[in-house]
Image (tube, rainbow, N blue to C red):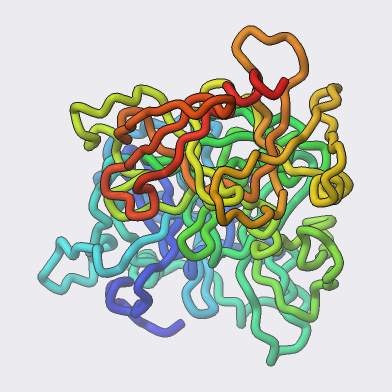
Length: 481
């Protein structure tokens, strides 16, 4: 093992590095994802004891054929008292070069994208006995994280398992598969249980794993995009990719994986966060024609592992556009809104023949329009879709802009007048653009005949949301129904 005891921040030149957030005792710890091999449950049979006079060595665990020494940080360091339920404890297998060591953690909180420019060094005198040199400062929703120096942990504990010392039969790791061709590059994935299926998500697209936030708009339990939620003021479509839609149940899927693609984000609801795997391209069977999968991997311990194509998922989730945050605009803290804002309701911004805004009151769902109904709308024929055992009529939004061009209908906003017991009406739109929180816009109103009440709104600080035409979709459902 190479003796590299430089701080993790000094060894890393990337602007943003994913870290795994774990808790040991009452301490929140961050570990670079490149140094995390996998997280596994505590062995049911316990650890194999290894006689030693002193130190923090708990014992040895059999992890996919490797005898990995397990260290208890709380025996070694003056950590705060444990505040976690022992039922959540895991063994976190760490790697440096070809060496492995494990630590016992009380909880795995998820992944966090750490901007390395924001990391602060707290120990300024070189000291090879320190395991924590730097911290990730706290935010409004996250505590301060202490960055663990894995190479120093191995050197100070003087325990590790070197892969080169394993028997040749053990070099193929069933839990973390490697390429059969030594020259092939591998890609790291996070494995999640989603409903009854296991999905591998590219780590590069994972920004964070957090408890599922409260839903603000239910779009239908049987829909892939089943709700809209909010994380730190940012609106997100909540997506369930399980075949039976079991991950749209908070009890069955209590976690959300925040996936990013450029300025957009979505929340993938998952049942359990399992481990990390490294896969080479030649061990994956590609599925180019599948709507969501990039491929499938079959392993002795993982059974069937479906590889998620993140680009395909974003392509099938046009509602991800509401996650775009304009600087100082929508998605920021609504407490910064002007005190004289007169609009107590949130607004949904959508794209039809142009960009509009509607109060969310009266909107019961936003669903994808089936291909047959899309074609009927383009041909000017009557269009219908099935929703919750109801047949819903879908209509195009009447053109308001004089230079309007026909919109390509992709989504239907299902609206229902208050107190109406009949089926809702679907209004076809091209896509969702944003969600404006309550008290964040100013409105000047007017009325235009049968179109109901129209007006203009302006969202503070949002360049894209100036002089937006307001169309109250709930009133339109009443007039057109």
